[in-house]
Structure formats: C-alpha cells, structure tokens
Amino acid sequence: MASKQSVTIVKLKKMRQDGEPIAMVTAYDYPSARLAEQAGVDMLLVGDSLGNVVLGYDSTIPVTLEDMVYHSRSVARGAEHTFIVADMPFMTYHGSLDETLRGVRRLMQEGHAHAVKMEGGAEIADTVAAVVRAGVPVLGHIGLTPQSVNQLGGYRIQGKDARDARRLLEDAKALQEAGAFGIVLELVTEAVAAEITKALDIPTIGIGAGRGCSGQVLVFHDLVKYTDDYREKRFVKTFADIGDQIRTGISDYVKEVKSGAFPAEQHVFAAEEGVTQSLYGKTERKVGVTS
Ligand code: KIV
Image (cartoon, rainbow, N blue to C red):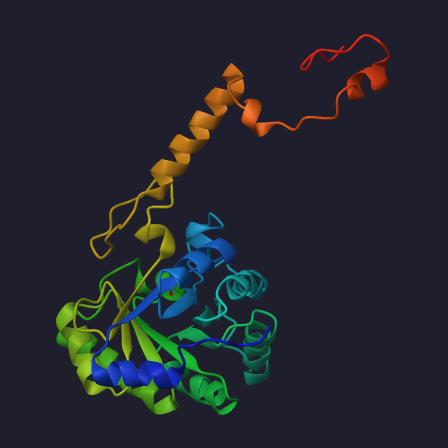
C-alpha cells in the first residue's frame, strides 16, 4: 500500500513550533480509521489499548505483535492520508535488537504503519536510537505506561512529587536525545507535563496530562462511548454516545424481527411473474410457508 499520509514528522514538528495543537485518536479497524480521518485527526494511534477496548482483556499485556499487525493493516486501509503510529506490544522491544527490529519491520511492512510507539524512558533510549537509526520514526510514551502496570502498582497519576517529576523530565530528555519525534505523556500532573513540554523541542501528546501539552490523544472507544459498561474517567470527555445508539438500534431490530415488521415490502426482491409456479407446478406457494 502506498504511503500517502499528509501529516509527516516534519509537519508535526512545525505544528509544535507554531503552537498548533495536534489531535490524535486511537483506531483499531477500517471503519474507525475512516471516520477519524474524515473527521480531520492529525495522527492515528493503533494502540495496544486494543487489548482492553476491542479484544476484551483487562490489560494491554496479552496483546501480541500478530494482533497489532492485523489491526494496523486494517487501519491503514481505512486512513490512507493520516500519519499512523502503531504500538510495539508488551516485551517485544526488551530482548535483542534483532528481535525489536523484526517487530518494527512487521508493523511497518505488514501493518503499513508510518511510525512505532514504545513505552519507557531513559532505560529504552538505546533501543529508540537504534530504531531511529534504522529509519523508523519513534513516538515515546512515559508517565503511566500500561505495559508496566504491575510494576507501577496500578493505573496511578505520575509526577505528583518532585522526585517523580525530575525522573519524568530526564526520561523525556533522554527520548528526545535518542531521536524520538514526539512523546506521549499519560496520566501526568498538569504542571509537570507543561514543564516537560517547555523543556523539549519535540511535541508532547497528552492523555490525562492537562492543557500544557502540544497535543492530545484519546482512546476512540472512550471518546464516543463505544462500550456497554463505560466507566467515567476524569481525563476523558465523551463527545458522543454511540454505545447507547447501537444498543437501541439492535434492540429495535430484534423487536421487528420478532414481530415480523422487518423485513417489509421495501426490503425484499421480486422474482419474475410465474417463477414460483414453474418451481412447484400449478399451486403457487405462499411466502413464509415452508412445508
Ligand atoms: O494504547 C493506547 O491507546 C495508548 C494511548 C492511551 C496513548 O497508548
């Protein structure tokens, strides 16, 4: 598939310099990607949040490289003009560099992503640098890093005290130094995220990190309430309620199938006059009579 994205890392850098906010949203399949592209997002993230919102896991840890490649490819088919970043899933970039580059290669060649995202700070800077050297744009991700949820002890806000804030700032600088083109700041206190943004040349994309970031990212399913059991999250604003609309639509369909109201005259196809007679002889069968 040819890469026709109109947003590039050069454009993103310029947007950051000009103070133009960057709008990013996750997408996991062809229709969500198409809708997001039509709506004018700057970047799509094929996030491993896929595990939670699409595959029904309770964390991102079970998500595999195979899952990411499959979903990234569907997204790329739906959004030919948008910059697509795909997540490197759990433990696919902590072993040998060969293994990391194999994963990156699959996301780019088979998943048709334009860039990859990796969770972690200074400790993965060498890996980020190696991937960038291979010609692949890398988006960093610090703060709450869901792949390390068991080590972090839960989905906690990061950067609450001075020590934590310093660590985040150092991690952000190490990622910039390693060549990352941007950094996602997840669940970071607003003042700390703003300071990190000021200290960097590359854009920061916040999720639960306040108003001082260069852009924002939200999970598609949160943004439009595409779930049956939506839990309010302080950092999310829901802009639509499609879960409710889908449930209502399907329940109306079930009612009409049961009552016989669907399909109606306008949903059926007529055969030529006399067709049923030719099938069954002189006695024409009534529609709906099966024996
Ligand atoms: O996987 C994901 O959706 C993410 C966002 C929350 C930034 O990493």
